Length: 363
Image (tube, rainbow, N blue to C red; front, side, top):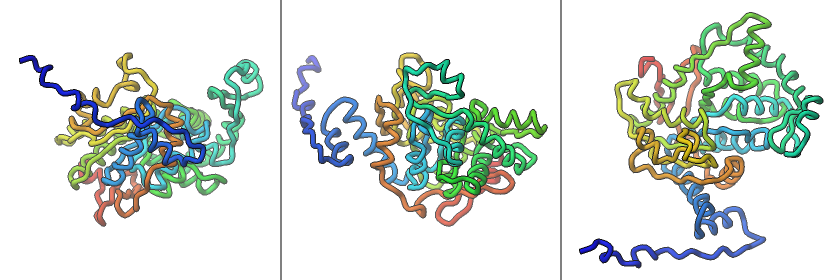
């Protein structure tokens, strides 16, 4: 018998779409809940927020990656809230966003601009454009002496980007006038990694520092890879699971995804990230990592074959704003804590026990 004759349409026509009723008095929460009863990307957005909240409730060790230009567009405080409210455990971000965060901490301002501005005219007066946003190029010159002063305090050895960013957060907390991602990460001891730190003004300033003063600030990016994978391995050994929240693509996205498959470096086998939330407008058809689906990541063993995923075709900046306004919070006592040791190693702390990752996994 043809299997199609066994299908009943009642197997499919189960959950009715609820027509969206505009409500000028609606809260953001009720608005997103209403979207969850519709279809398309609006329903996916609601599902993504619900899944991230479920990850928080399940006490996952959450790795978050952020690419794009959210900080100059105004969303630095939203990212900082992910750290402050314990909505994530590890952050992976671009050097450019850390640069703009550093500038805002010392009081620099980004400005609403115009997409159709004359870029040659902007360049002639040292104004930089980020699509519809302007920045004052002189801000980079103003922060250079501070970067130099900070760099002179660094140990004379290679560092992870995580150690460098943690120390930088402490330095800019001491001189800054505004809060930011760097300060939030320092205060909450959250590991922040930057896989392409040289691809930014932050990296170029260190090149300038080397040229001017001859001191080499050297990053051990392989140690970054080992640390991130060790966090995954320790979490699973302690009976926890890991999950990801992804804004955009690029190097930060792959960095957090490969933290799972990297356990082979320690002769272990990972379970794959248990959940994944992704906000992106990159197409999958190019074959690149930025637009790849979570399902594709299963083939690489980055995700559990039964991964619970919510993927939204939506601008990551808007997604950051919405998520930061709707996510729940966690008690710090439920989460991994970390100690950034003076020798450059990282110690994870959970349930009152300390685990120096380099000592435990011999790297």
